[in-house]
Amino acid sequence: MRTKNKRLAAAVGGIVLAIGLAVQPVASAATLFADDFEDGSADGWTRSGGSWSVVTDDSRVYQQTGTSSDARALVGGAWADQTVRARVKPNGYNGSNRQVAVLARARDTSDYYYLALTNSGSVVLGRRSGGSLATLASAAVAAPTGTWQTLRLEAFGTTLRGFVGDTPLVTATDGTFSSGRAGVATYYAAAAFDDVAVTDVPGTGGPPTTEPPTTEPPTPGTCDTSGRPTGFASVNAWGQNGTTGGAGGATVEVDTAAEFLAAIARTGPLNICVRGMIALPGPMHDVTSDKTIVGIGAASGFTGGGLNIGLPVDDAVTAPPAGAVHNVIVRNLVFHDWPDDAINVQMFSHHVWLDHNDLSHGYDGVIDIKRGSSYVTVSWNHTHNHTKNMLLGHDDGNAAQDVGRLKVSYHHNWFDQTPQRNPRVRFGEPVHVYNNYYLHNTDVGVACQADAGCLVEGNYFENVEEPVSNHYAGPTGRCVARNNVFTGAEPGQPECSGSVEEARNYYAYTLDDPNTVRTSVMAGAGVGKI
Image 1 (cartoon, rainbow, N blue to C red):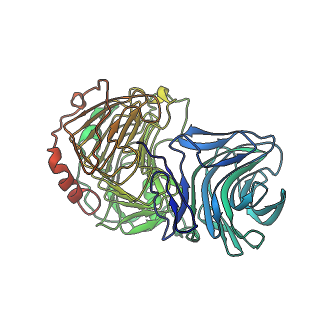
Image 2: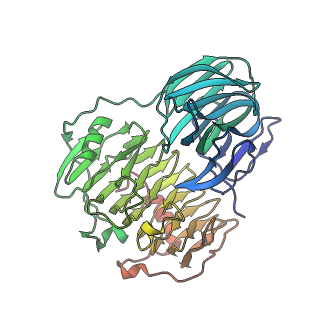
Image 3: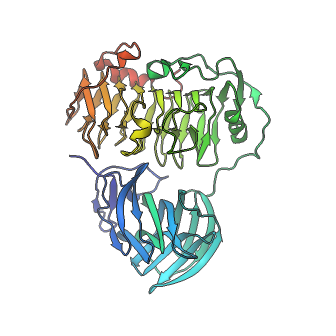
């Protein structure tokens, strides 16, 4: 039975009502509720006003399209202390001083606290009582349409705090409401909401600090940049013969955000050795072509931000452009607490190798590959403590960019209790998923849809109820599953049909015995292993 990405905990008598997947932990908080809407429904939400539906916007989101009145959607029980966090994207405003918001301690649809982005250029911490809106505090923040931002509203005792991203901007003291439900709302505005989470402790404080930006080159350094990929990243295609990253360029060492961001922005080949954990400003940072980025040791990487490998999104571009980002290697890095994606590959980027990384406790996707990107290998990574794992193809309606592309190899990865997107595939063919270790993926292992062609072989599935499916949550795809191991208390079986192009038409490979995969991947995946 497929589960839903929702979890709701009642605070009375220790009774827990759990719907579906466990979500990634937030500090030591108890997660009262979480919903990423990937099941295609908004079960459990109570709506008042507006026009609400779950739609696809890269991932699935909860959208409200009406702009002629205010609209609210509430969820949960009579929670007292609570942190409500959600990604919010205004899509349109009808008039001046209109708002999109998250809600806390909602007694009903007319009585609650709110944290709102407005089209007057502010964030407002307010109280709605008997239908009347009262501003308790405000600060200047731009809220353009079409842009995702994260709102976090904390209500603990009589103290209220509002954050945009991880930046605390507004605070107030008010004792009108002591408990209530969580929610999202619009006031004469249209908006989309995603990744709603409610916990019972405050979140972390302000944003990570970084040194002032500089364009000075980092100091010379050393790290192992000698490796080369197998799989699709090794193929000669699109004017690039294999993936060599920064080969032929200088090698530099970075240990601050300013040094790292300057290095990945440089033109030409460059090897970048990352020392220690670097706190990046959120959310995403562009990597230019011909770069190798390698962590030193087993404790180097990034918190607070992710890497974008690709040009800006442009729906009008339907063939690989001459300036597509290419030839990038990312290895031996820890990614933690990212506010968007850990690694995003988009807009026909090609020849990318993502290898031996440890990725956990983030907000949106671990590794998302989309919009025509191709000739990518994802290997020997350990992903854990996270729900949205790996997406290949972002939307069922993006055939113009994706058909004939999205050629990706996934091998020797440890998908460690990551419920979904392991990977979730649209349009790509062949997508070669081999010699990976799947452990207790509670929603689905490989999901192959939207006419994708997935070749799934030599993997080890342990306690995975639905290991492979070609009819998961959307238009059907095609899959061939062969020579896999299915084991555990309730081992599932693949649900596959159709034919798929062979990966051997592009590159040679040798499968490991699937019975050895669990041991070899647990020993070899992640950081400190290259």
